[in-house]
Length: 338
Image (cartoon, rainbow, N blue to C red; front, side):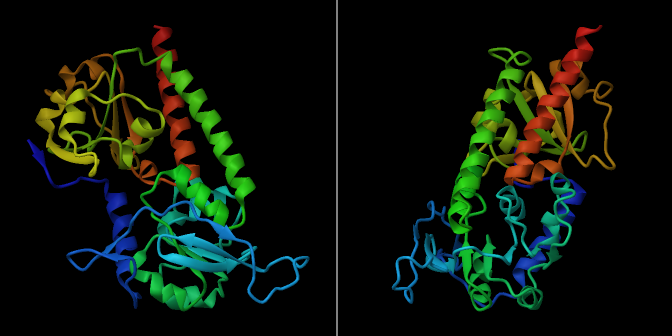
């Protein structure tokens, strides 16, 4: 039976705890559309539009120092060429556009896919004093509850952190004045996605499907659709879901928790199992449930690092795609030699 409790790796729980505790403090305002329960609705932000003008600049030959961008929370005047950007959720997005923020949330700075890219960036932990001390000229946030407080420090732009990565890159390109970089990244991304799909098409045959789980041999495991850990696998790579997964998961939620003993009802021809890679790895072949599954018998169960697949920024998504291709090609090569 489906349940409503989501299991995530311990490292991810710790990361969420740090982020949520930080986001709940230091906020003096609440913006956006109010919902019935008093919370703030974070509606999908449309692609930002820009007016390249300064009210105080009457000489058309003088380059404007600020621009007006339109966001889901209204118009915001931002620097034409921001130099000291602070962000909570969008570190990887901004780095992908060749802009290095001066401050970001430590949870995202620990992203394995950003290793070697975050030196010199201060951990703000969503602390208002820490942010103020960095003298930012622009703040980019995914936390609507902190928006008003951030606006008192510097021009602040809110982005929907659940929007598709392509939309986020386009919008940030406008906000940061990096439209050319955003366009180049999107072109490169589409080429790599196309190449990855071609590589996987020689492994995953027509009519076969893929299932994404989290939890290993735990009593309760998480089943993913086209969201969270399944975002890259089912979303970007378009690897087909098992029909029972499609029927059982609310697409607005993207996941469900099931009893381990029901795994066979949802298991595809290929299985990706998210685990806490630092401390977990399981013997599926000798398990009375998992050992009976075709994917296990055919050596087509792949353990992936659940912590790495938590991140959804452009650099991480690109890395996740490459990880999937590499592990499946390596397994196919091993099997071909037997």
